Image (tube, rainbow, N blue to C red; front, side, top):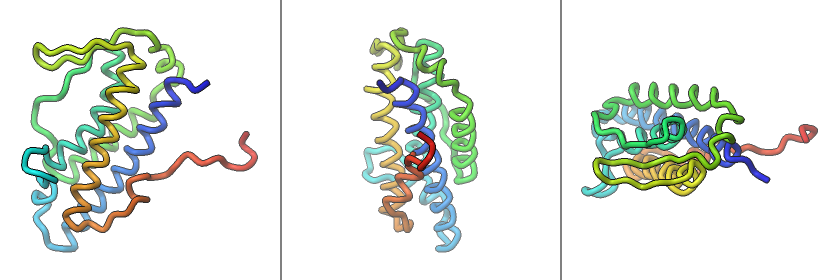
Length: 176
């Protein structure tokens, strides 16, 4: 049987680390090409979609923010300004990676059955913690990570699938 921790936090950590690399490649590309970094930070796939900065912010929000939301029993989207530079995005992801590394597996597994609500203004969706993490935050997390990758890839940043996947959790011989 797989635990709630195993189904969520290691995946969050893998893709957050990959997104750190994607942000670094975006910053390097802007510098190498003489492109104003704001052009990439504010880039969108389509006019009605939110920009790169929001996508990266959402990777943090739907990973460590989701864990914090379950702890509090309520998750609400951020409404304030988003990071406005590659350095700020990198710092946010570094903080996210550190917070995820500190998450106690027993705590996450103890969330099972706990009430968690998604609240946005007067709109509310009630979940169990496991359904919130697995059917709401995890899909949103992957969506925003892929969209951040896609935005930079469409802008010409030399990214490949390995950049998006990051470091998979492979079996190491002799560690069974």
